[in-house]
Length: 290
Image (tube, rainbow, N blue to C red; front, side, top):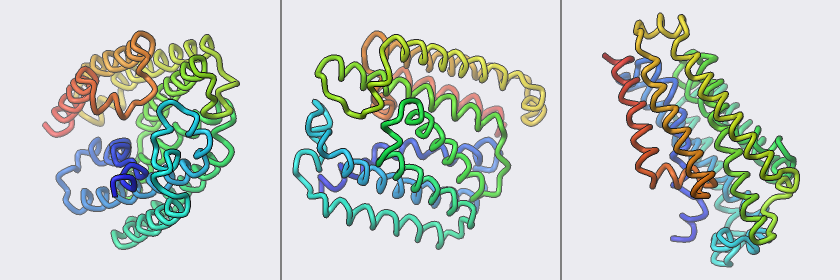
């Protein structure tokens, strides 16, 4: 059971909390019916993501055995067979679709989840080996999460939330590729073929550009007239402090500590990042739900 759970990577499910953002920003978190359907989408998306993790590990089992850290994964270490991984993948997909159907999340929500599955199967088989396309697909996946949450709850999705989600995910994806390159330079192990299309100078520049654009876009969002009118609040810009601190902290971890390759691990363990997220949530909670 321990190895089955490791293969599903439940700690990664924290990324799927993005499905709640449309509900949070709409000020309708207290609406139980909308909260229930959004939670169902969260569970369904988490199961679908776990199915993709299983399938990805099946595709990468040989290369993972050569990686200094990934070699401990259940398939790479031999703790679980590929056949069991295929069965677990199928079960997660079926259960995910069943939850969406029972929760009446809507045809468009199911379409987005299935599209996410198809895109990530293509990613696992081929597209993750294509330079730049790999990071863009990862970033689009986070936009899909937002879209699924909004469609299920019948909430209009602002272009600002789409842009900010994509930019933040792109920043994190470049940080992960930088970590892959660090491992490659140290060990000579190629975890994915796309890494040969990157070098440290390019990835450092990409991280700086992505972080700068993310911060500037967020500041533009926070002082936008339509945002101020929608929230009926002139102090949205105060939340930018936590965004700037969070981005700079992540860059510090990537450039100084060499720990930018696992955003979920950082989210679970780094107190500074946790405080930045908590501060941002508190500010917006006060703005939206005051």
